[in-house]
Image (cartoon, rainbow, N blue to C red; front, side, top):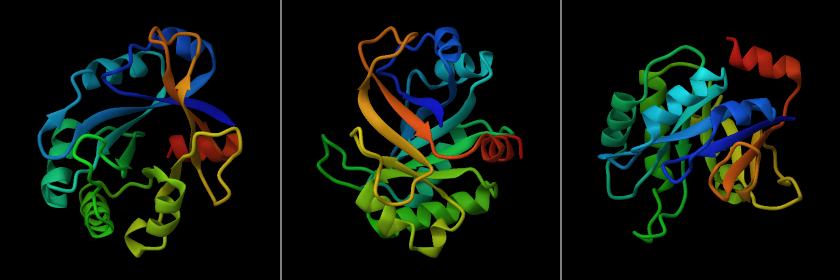
Length: 195
């Protein structure tokens, strides 16, 4: 299984050391809602590029902003580059105490598909949310990126699994970092990342 990580403005990764430790990809927070841009996005984006990690950008969905405005904001910030992943982060906002609705997530998926018709889109959420949302046709072709902080893999199907939010790895200068696994063969990984 391929190792990867999730980086936001709270993290200070040493990209060279992470690549040397075997990490193959990084999902990097780009945007949230309709206005917020991660202050570390471009620094992390270039840092991961510099050591040839496969990169993905993620958008944290918000209830109080329309899906159209959120997709517009996300795609204004994320470069339109070959080989990158686009990730919708569908989770509870700890400060606002709200979460994007299923209907908003479905509209976000439709609009993103129209604007970036590529096959590297991921839905990140807790296992029950991923299972439920993946039944909607708007998420056909999306990859399942499950957040389950445990030593036991998700019981449902998954493509990427964020198994801890308190990981410690060589090359992460901060105390903890989110760590992921990819659930596929080397051939599948190469087909996915080189298409």
